[in-house]
Length: 85
Image 1: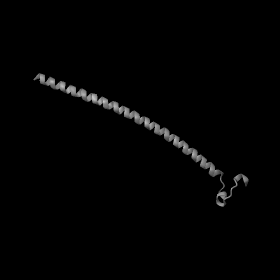
Image 2 (image 1 turned 135 degrees about the vertical axis):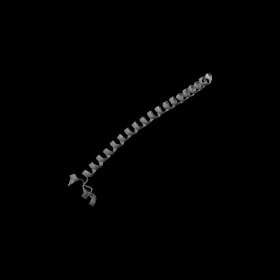
Image 3 (image 1 turned 90 degrees about the horizontal axis):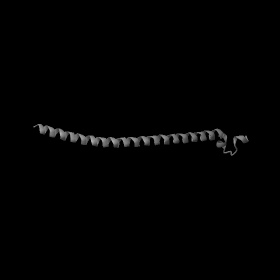
Image 4 (image 1 turned 120 degrees about the vertical axis):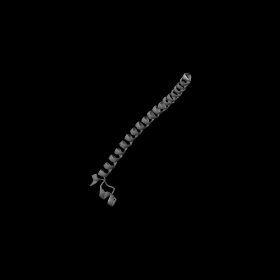
Protein backbone atom coordinates (compact mmCIF):
# COMPACT_ATOMS: atom_id res chain seq x y z
CA UNK A 1 0.00 0.00 0.00
CA UNK A 2 2.86 2.38 0.75
CA UNK A 3 4.30 1.76 -2.72
CA UNK A 4 0.96 2.74 -4.29
CA UNK A 5 1.07 6.10 -2.54
CA UNK A 6 4.70 6.46 -3.55
CA UNK A 7 3.84 5.64 -7.16
CA UNK A 8 0.94 8.13 -7.11
CA UNK A 9 3.24 10.83 -5.74
CA UNK A 10 5.80 10.11 -8.46
CA UNK A 11 3.10 10.33 -11.12
CA UNK A 12 1.82 13.61 -9.65
CA UNK A 13 5.37 14.97 -9.58
CA UNK A 14 5.92 13.96 -13.20
CA UNK A 15 2.66 15.62 -14.29
CA UNK A 16 3.51 18.74 -12.31
CA UNK A 17 6.94 18.96 -13.96
CA UNK A 18 5.33 18.61 -17.39
CA UNK A 19 2.81 21.36 -16.62
CA UNK A 20 5.60 23.56 -15.29
CA UNK A 21 7.58 23.01 -18.48
CA UNK A 22 4.55 23.96 -20.60
CA UNK A 23 3.93 27.05 -18.47
CA UNK A 24 7.54 28.12 -18.89
CA UNK A 25 7.20 27.78 -22.68
CA UNK A 26 3.96 29.79 -22.58
CA UNK A 27 5.63 32.45 -20.43
CA UNK A 28 8.49 32.72 -22.90
CA UNK A 29 6.06 33.08 -25.81
CA UNK A 30 4.05 35.71 -23.96
CA UNK A 31 7.19 37.64 -23.07
CA UNK A 32 8.20 37.74 -26.75
CA UNK A 33 4.70 38.80 -27.76
CA UNK A 34 4.72 41.63 -25.23
CA UNK A 35 8.11 42.79 -26.48
CA UNK A 36 6.81 42.81 -30.06
CA UNK A 37 3.72 44.76 -29.01
CA UNK A 38 5.87 47.26 -27.15
CA UNK A 39 8.04 47.76 -30.24
CA UNK A 40 4.96 48.21 -32.42
CA UNK A 41 3.45 50.75 -30.03
CA UNK A 42 6.71 52.68 -29.94
CA UNK A 43 6.90 52.70 -33.74
CA UNK A 44 3.29 53.89 -33.97
CA UNK A 45 3.90 56.72 -31.53
CA UNK A 46 6.94 57.85 -33.51
CA UNK A 47 4.87 57.73 -36.69
CA UNK A 48 2.14 59.81 -35.04
CA UNK A 49 4.73 62.38 -33.98
CA UNK A 50 5.88 62.62 -37.60
CA UNK A 51 2.31 63.00 -38.84
CA UNK A 52 1.60 65.68 -36.23
CA UNK A 53 4.71 67.59 -37.33
CA UNK A 54 3.61 67.37 -40.97
CA UNK A 55 0.13 68.66 -40.07
CA UNK A 56 1.66 71.59 -38.17
CA UNK A 57 3.83 72.42 -41.17
CA UNK A 58 0.83 72.34 -43.51
CA UNK A 59 -1.17 74.52 -41.12
CA UNK A 60 1.65 77.06 -41.03
CA UNK A 61 1.83 77.11 -44.83
CA UNK A 62 -1.94 77.59 -45.16
CA UNK A 63 -1.94 80.31 -42.50
CA UNK A 64 0.92 82.09 -44.29
CA UNK A 65 -0.90 81.82 -47.62
CA UNK A 66 -4.16 83.14 -46.15
CA UNK A 67 -2.31 85.99 -44.45
CA UNK A 68 -0.64 87.02 -47.68
CA UNK A 69 -3.70 86.84 -49.92
CA UNK A 70 -5.95 89.84 -50.48
CA UNK A 71 -9.66 88.93 -50.35
CA UNK A 72 -10.49 91.46 -53.08
CA UNK A 73 -8.12 89.69 -55.44
CA UNK A 74 -10.11 86.50 -55.01
CA UNK A 75 -13.46 88.26 -55.35
CA UNK A 76 -12.58 90.30 -58.43
CA UNK A 77 -9.92 88.06 -59.97
CA UNK A 78 -7.05 90.54 -59.76
CA UNK A 79 -3.63 89.04 -60.28
CA UNK A 80 -1.67 91.70 -58.42
CA UNK A 81 -0.29 91.15 -54.93
CA UNK A 82 -0.71 93.29 -51.80
CA UNK A 83 2.63 94.91 -52.41
CA UNK A 84 1.36 96.42 -55.70
CA UNK A 85 -1.46 98.39 -53.99
